[in-house]
Image 1 (spheres, helix red, strand yellow):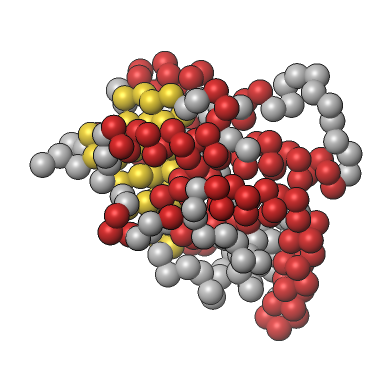
Image 2 (image 1 turned 120 degrees about the vertical axis):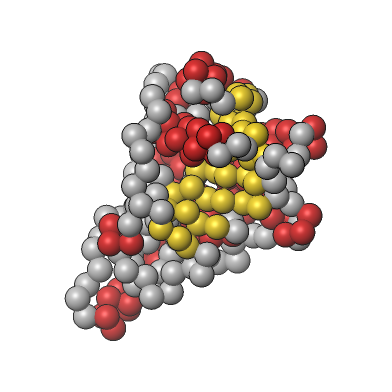
Length: 243
């Protein structure tokens, strides 16, 4: 019996390209493969020999953010509103579409890029009642660690472990306070799909819910994490992304 995979990518070329590399390799191994993303990437997907599935317009917004004359926020509101618009607001419609697709044609495995939050809808039920989920790490690992500063700050670890962990703990609390609107929006989305809420965790930690965290790099390219998730695996650099 042929194994089946549904890949879910945010509608941006830097996300679709790497996911297509994964899709093509699965197809080469005999899998039945589909890729869910924005309509602007239909040709890119089909030319790669992969079945294309379209996101609804409400979830197909990433490419358009910042391209128009929409009102700009200032200060911290810029960061919060940017993350909400880019990743949280599309998650609800994406989750609805994902559930529809799986009802119409189930998949054995759902693979998703690290910012496709719609996949969180799958975690409202036990593992035995949903597909295997794989987070495809096409960028730096985003989950929290006592050994690293919060994701996105670009702050390197300190040499003294005790001081490093103390600093990171303070930064973690500060980041959650600064990004409180994002965390509130994320919790509202999670509640709407019946998935577990953050319960004080950093919003990027929702990534570690997937059954496998597949980072497409080597461990030496990531900051060391003594408390890394048990399901984190490094698969080395991938082939050149499809464009």
